[in-house]
Image (cartoon, rainbow, N blue to C red; front, top):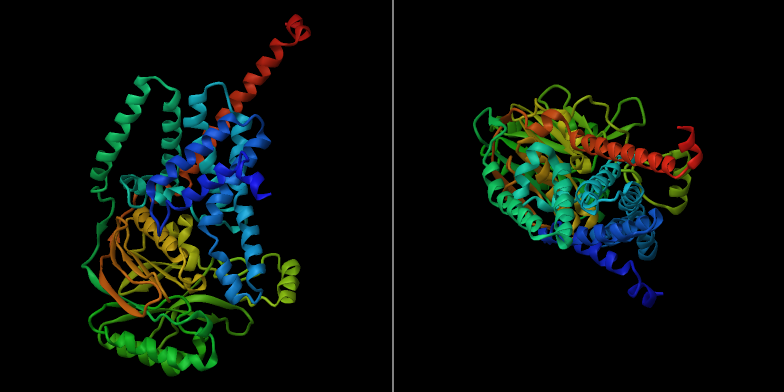
Length: 516
């Protein structure tokens, strides 16, 4: 079977998808996204049937996700009590599901493909590919990981992120790939035009990056992020609670008075808020505030009088109840069981440990921090730009608390950091990212790393941040603009193909011609 795969039509597609995975962090082979898509588009151009184009896209997707997010098996294996073989099978099933989205894009391309090969490459295929990414970003709560736009975070194309976000960058990667492929069979005039366009963009876009869409609304202040690096397997042991509290408190007090804002990561405290608030948290927050330092921390919160509890960020208060933001976008099969009546018995039978968090209901993800409204996201909420935008324009900066310890020393924390940088560029805001084991970061409005922690290291990360006001075009228009335009474009193509087929049918039917 392996020998047959090596000589099959689809083996080069697997390799191309694998190459695209290396365009993302931590490898950052930014150029790799282009030849990878060029090969995929070449296959789609030569697919004789929609079914063949579907399979081409699926095998390419297997390469991308198989090499890009196979780290998923780490959490399933180490914390799911299923063993390595079962964990790998579950990860592969999820990878096969994700590969369906480029497959559906290929099927659509084959259905709508017209007579002009160049138009197919530069109009149809880029639009269909990006809409496949967009569909993956919201269907069944969405998983917009490894969008090709993220591969350009550190290239001149990133200057366009405030205009159209990651979707615009994905479309430009796809468009450039189609243009490059189209030049292979074109004359020298088209090749020269494409080369001239590439040169203009490469040297002109850095100038655009100097354009500031947002402005400061106050003085810069120091932020400190406490990365305690507590092993995930030890985190929730009862005997670990007191050492955890002491560690976070001692690390925070070393920067109290110097830093105006101190951040702890997601579920930094392995206990419910109401159990430690009065006797431990309030006194600590009071001591820090007396020195001029505000504290925000990740902690589970139970709803009084019910069995509901939330994954939350809290800002302790001196005498009142803490201000709370409860996570609204929960991780399926990690924080809750979708279709619980069907899935919960299976999860319980397999003995998979899984939280049963309830989703938060806040209309907007805002908390006060260091005297400013801050846009809050927990864990992978920050990979959804449509949710981050809900905090704007009020948010002076963005805060994300995460715990990527579930995935060990893998590519996952670096990929997550790359997406957080994109949210900073899209919004024109500082992004303050606190994680348990890394990678924590203080990110500037242009996506630049003002400070960055190591992975699997205990450290305090400190740097200056600045409150910002105003809106980038992307946030002002909304994250749906590019997908909506591409949907309209494909709808127009579909309408034209329908008209062409209808006219063609009339021309081939003598009886209908006679009736005219």
